[in-house]
Amino acid sequence: MAPQLTGAGGAAAVKPQFHHFHHHRLATRHHHPSPTSLLSKLAFWSVCSLSLLLAFLLLSPSAAPAPQAAPDSPRRSLHTSSPSAATWGGAAWEKKVRASARVRRANGRGLSVLVTGAAGFVGCHAAAALRRRGDGVLGLDNFNDYYDPALKRGRAALLARSGVYVVDGDIADAELIAKLFDVVPFTHVLHLAAQAGVRHALVDPMSYVRANVGGFVALLEAARMADPQPAIVWASSSSVYGLNSHVPFSEHDRTDRPASLYAATKKAGEEIAHAYNHIYGLSLTALRFFTVYGPWGRPDMAYFFFTRDILAGRPITVYESAGGGTHQTTISRDFTYIDDIVKGCIGALDTAGRSTGNGGKKRGPAPFRTYNLGNTSPVPVTQLVDLLEKLLKVKAVRKIVKMPRNGDVPYTHANISLAQRELGYRPSTDLQTGLKKFVRWYLEYYMPGFAGKQKQHGSSNSKSSRGRSGNTSSAR
Ligand SMILES: O=C(O)[C@H]1O[C@H](OP(=O)(O)OP(=O)(O)OC[C@H]2O[C@@H](n3ccc(=O)[nH]c3=O)[C@H](O)[C@@H]2O)[C@H](O)[C@@H](O)[C@@H]1O
Figure 1 (cartoon, rainbow, N blue to C red):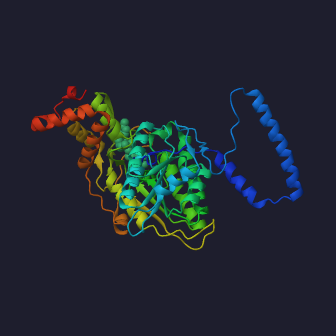
Figure 2: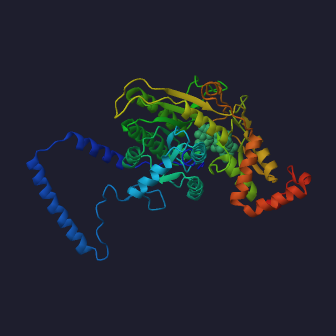
Figure 3: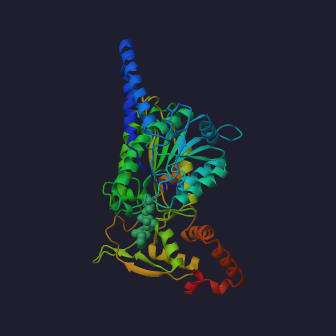
């Protein structure tokens, strides 16, 4: 939810139809046939259409022909990954979109933000926080099945309760995105829809290219044509540092040696963003998130599936070291709590500075920024497991292995001085505190009965129930 919900969590599948639509728009703008040729074409196409209609009626006993969608009637979304037959368009839909994006602050001054990946982990939390401030927020998510879509629906339901509508659609649906920019003069886009996860890129490499490159370009195309052009803040990744060994990682360090395709597509996004900033005057801010965790998190991340497997008594694979020989490195992550990340996102939105172009034309230079959002205190993965054992009161069955060559990097550590200075970013949650909140949410969400028992047990027998006592049976 993240209400990230995909983004950072919700991965966006990209649709090829974007190209057709774009060409169609260009064609209608530049080609001017004579009135006679128009009339003869009209007559020809009318005859064709009538014949087709007749053939369809004759051949299909039950189905009535679908009427051509009028601009104001609901349309079927073209993306196929959603389990529901998503629709968009129509007066009622537009009303819902406008209401969600309306600023609700008393002084009327606030942001109007399109949050992509709003049903993903970070997206959900960020959208909720913006709404709490009184900003206007519209969500967009394709609810794909990279991980359990029910979790994404749960995050969207949470947002709906606070008045944030999440449109079921894809960032690569150019027609939909253009419509959203037509209906709402967004001041900002918080772009979190992406194909996330480092290791999954070994399994489905093209999904990364479609969402993180194709989808991002589709969004930027729509944004550059929008009037007003929004400022865009988007999720890059700590993974762009790749094989960089200069610690802590600073925005000035090398990012030209990615260790995974995921990292390479995020790095490509940073370069693409630069081009759009340069050509069209779009204000662009990349946020390099460092292993974000917390309630409503992503089930594909280690802290999440370690929790699930520890509770189920299943073994977990813990990468302990890499490098071999004399250069052993403890596998560590600069785990960053979701609330801190959300504060960083909001700081970036508030300080973004305007895009300068409109209608696809640049009018002057616009801000181009990149920030690390980490916690600045790397923790070994083995210690993450220690903490989970303590919080779950269940001993993990650990299978310790050397880190395979799967795209993971051994170590991350953010230098956050730039974000501190320019965004007022000050992370304040240590891993133990943040994991405690995650575990509480996890138990309540997935195991309400167990959570209740654990609470009772904790209050009546607080001392003996803590610590790693190996009481696996209580968890099952
Ligand atoms: O910081 C980031 O940019 C990235 O953070 C995470 O990637 P990662 O740090 O690899 O997070 P996890 O997949 O949760 O892995 C955390 C740690 O656990 C380790 N791990 C993972 C899986 C496993 O079975 N065992 C294990 O020890 C990994 O090597 C890593 O050190 C996210 O999954 C990415 O989407 C995000 O972009």
